[in-house]
Length: 160
Image (cartoon, rainbow, N blue to C red):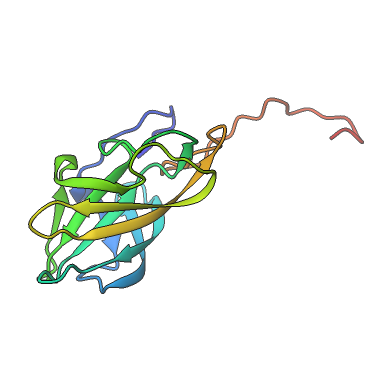
């Protein structure tokens, strides 16, 4: 979560709720993460894919959704990954236990890009989410309120 001073504050898995709760079905889903203390929410569209022989699902919650051309995904700071088993239990997946399948390096084109991550053995589950890539980095939403500091606040009539 991003604090008002712009720093990233780690949040414990007990400090937020994920809805819908329970087992997610394969296919496109909308997932909402709500920070319990602040009631801040973030909503993500995710694709849930079940691997053969395993009926759990993998959920990738992006923390960073805007990248600069050539920038790579940082598995430690840019997303949080969970595996949900068929009994409804949710386990946090360590960055060492999943790989970024695509992009395989830095982003090579501008616009909306799909990120695919894969849980390592035993499940081999995939999850996807969408990010935006710009030539100059654009503006990144990293949870929490949007804080804008305009460079100019006083205008005369007719001025744009």
